[in-house]
Image 1: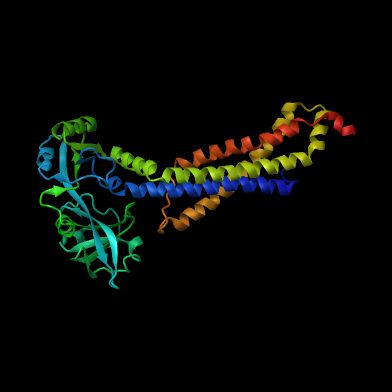
Image 2: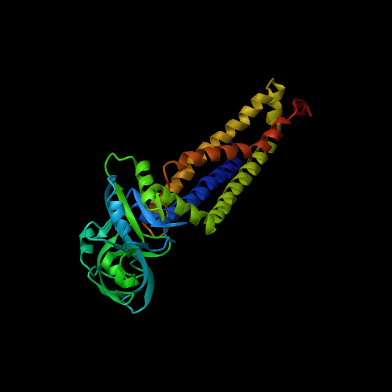
Length: 365
């Protein structure tokens, strides 16, 4: 039946491919955006973050006092603690126009919270006071500045010394520089920072260390890196409309697939109503008819899964290093495959109902 009724098979196959490809593409963009939301947190190399109180996400904190550094470093569970400063500025492009950027400052020489991958240069370039690093995906937006290019951010002279790879922020273009340079660009008061990054001693109890930090810094928000990443992603997902937008588009993809599968399988069964009647006339049970319809659906679904994931992998490989946010975690394909099989079987229920209504006596009409 699958091989002979090619038009119906192709239609149902298209429905399965639509579910896998459309939903998979939407999920890859969503996870790519989620990575952008917490990119600095996820790549900080710290175990904990100390920020201002009543924090809702990592980008919405107030400045905190540098005196907290002494309290943190004094704890025996702490291996090191480093400040980080995040500000805003206008990047002057080579043609004289301006682009808004977020400048991230790290304390030398450790440069904790700074770039983690480079397309050109390395972290040593940021040891120079005037040096900054921009991401390769933002080069076109910033006017294609070459390494060594002199320009301005916030009216302060800087030199593009390195190009990062994959350091893109959700709220804007990220530019990395030394802590002192960012203070100068953002006009931050002395002794004030955006956050303090903390690394615990090897073998230290992370929960106990976090509790100690909260005890000595009751006026601050103290989060583990994983918790702060989840908090930030959850905030943007629920408060910016991204969750509803992607949820709606994903549901549209599923509905399209269900409608295509249902209609094509229903049409196929209608065209073969006499064949099902013959099955019943020669002793076939309702269960046997069910097995035929379900097997037909599963064959089409498995084939569609293969084609859909193949097309999706081609798309992800093509956009993996582009400006399009694209990331597909390893746990998603099995879940997507299971959901697709369930949706396909649900779509075949209308066709199954029609097949079970076939009467053996119809053969003799």
